[in-house]
Image (cartoon, rainbow, N blue to C red):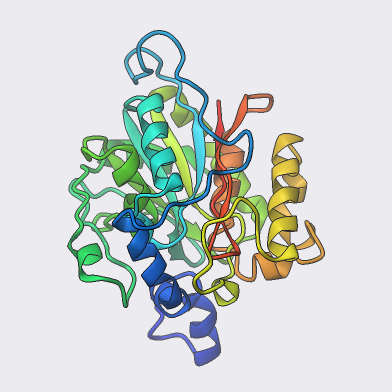
Length: 328
């Protein structure tokens, strides 16, 4: 079932809103002026950490579903919705990343902004709408459309791949901003079919990792699997007016991001699944796991020993980790 915020009790509603688009408006309102400046090119983001720029494209033609059907798997730290219209180091890295990846057959997106309870759902919409699941942002953000087609057949195949788990079907679900705000930079023509998988927020980390593992076979069918969230995401602890930075501006944010990277490098899946004990400040870094769980789907879909590449590293608003990872 989709989460019904209106029917939730006040304490429950407050928790659920942390994973919904409306929470973005209240917690990130102080970021709007700076993000708007970035959108017009008035602000220049600092370069990401050493080693984070994309490697130069390899020789030969770009990979496509026809020439190299096995796709990598990605995790993207999407940050504020304002990144959809910003011109900064992060969005430029996304654009270059998309050019290097080439055109997959389809994209399976696991976004922090589609949460369900006690079940997983897949979207089988043939023409998904662009969902503006946030409030209090500039009008130009609400005018944006990302008219990518859906992939109903592949979505149903993904549902079958989860057996014996039963996945629900949502034939009307569109693309939330965790999906389109990054894809409009990576695939600006909106010509790659996209479908989404919901996150059952009632389940532990082990469950989400297992779902990712069950979906890994889709990579061999030309499907690019992407988890979209943030490794460190505490909206109440963001810093108003803070410039983009190569490191977190609080010890708890920086420590968690660095420890998560080390665990990724060492294939420490159990440590990442039990994120609450990853660092002493873990519950400040991840007070609610909606944005963290997409990392576990990507990690589960990766294959042990695959090349790991950090396409972008850095922070926005002081404490939002924008870490982006590619496996394969």
